[in-house]
Image (cartoon, rainbow, N blue to C red; front, side, top):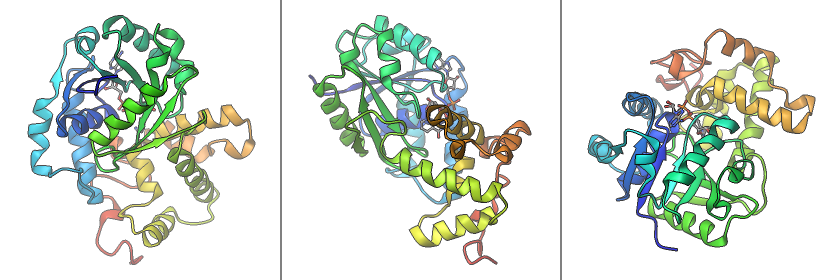
Length: 299
Ligand SMILES: NC(=O)c1ccc[n+]([C@@H]2O[C@H](COP(=O)([O-])OP(=O)(O)OC[C@H]3O[C@@H](n4cnc5c(N)ncnc54)[C@H](O)[C@@H]3O)[C@@H](O)[C@H]2O)c1
């Protein structure tokens, strides 16, 4: 299998914009498509201010940010974006039917040897691969938010993914300064999302039950891990609607009442408190309390 040079990104929202930037920053030819022509610029603006809030920059000098963005070629449609791809990364909304439709279109448009990856947080590629004639080239390639500042990604195959596909994905991740996290056996949540998920479930339970103020959980996390932000800020960054959707998928999978997303989280989402993107989540933006001096000391 030849090395991956041409990368196509389908969907330029929160994650897709960052994946396109990361690949372009390390010399790949990146072509992208989003039906919303403003998506890339809007998402980049939000990512940049989120990076400033948490004091965590990209893995390359921030001065290169605009030049790198200019290197991402925007195609007018999906077929045009995929026609020369070695690897396509699908980053559209978390909906299995939409992803299957996009994979079927990509299968027709991309060169026969191109890898087709999904960045889905909760849908294994085994539920998408049959929409294509190339299951051996399909895989999960899951980046973390903020993808420009947390350089790691899960790799997981489907029922017929070839070992060469996994190896090529590993090499690609190394080439963009990302640590590959291979998953040996299909599991919901991949490698690290499973760990993050346990933290999320427990911290949401403590907040929703009124046991501890969420700010103190973030403080404790920051002191203990040395990170510049805690789980509640991270949920605001991801989007509380996205968090709720993912928790709902886990609950549907396990049917364990302990996995049910708390009502208080549903209420927040229903009120439009979606995190950074809506100006309010657990914290208020653009000046969240957790980024102010003295927060860590509990003053
Ligand atoms: N937000 C996160 O923290 C996060 C983290 C890891 C993985 N993911 C996964 O990444 C995927 C995208 O999430 P997001 O948060 O970036 O969503 P988002 O809503 O920010 O972006 C989705 C983008 O897809 C575009 N789109 C919709 N239909 C399309 C189509 N047919 N072709 C091309 N583009 C299309 C939309 O216009 C939008 O810009 C999901 O599968 C999600 O599970 C998200």
